[in-house]
Image (cartoon, rainbow, N blue to C red; front, side, top):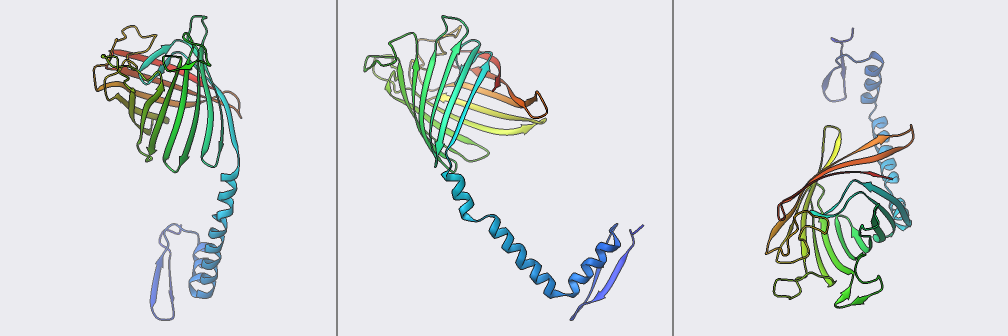
Length: 283
């Protein structure tokens, strides 16, 4: 009805023509009044900027940063695959964390349903600012020395340092074992086994995806496939790709107000010729 509507008017110094396609006449008249009265436009402009500044005021950001945040959860996974290493079958993996002003302390564990399954308990102290992150993790696995054994040659602990940066489209991370079970070389020297990963998140088909590639850069007996692997190696001879993975996540609605995150992941480990397909639920 209003497809050919044109409104002509004169400003103080020049003639302007506004063409309104398929617009309501009331809206056209409203904008005519605004254009004719520059004082109204100026007041609206100033008030708009004032509201924007107030909404993004610094005290609101500072309040959020000063708040202690705590989280608790658990995953149920069909298989425990970590950096391309096969470490177990169906497992429950609880987590607990506390964060304050960029610092965080977290606990994470993994336990299988069979008595013979290896149990794992990790503690991580970290700091993050923007995309930058740095952390130290204490990994402990059952089946060896008891938890409080920290001897240089008699411990079930591995201490690892991490540094990384998340650029948004791509995240890079470097990890190095620096104490405890750091891994060995073929000549018996300490390997200080390390791992470098590049990951990229993206969306496809309504799902959240993450692609990752991880490598171990030098000789070690740490990233040899994992204790549950069917084809482990005694030694990684040098630079090796130990993880190529693709993970997809979605929310499974249980009730109107509650949903469970579900993920499925395929992982290849070219270094030991391993391939895995696992799924899990997060609570």
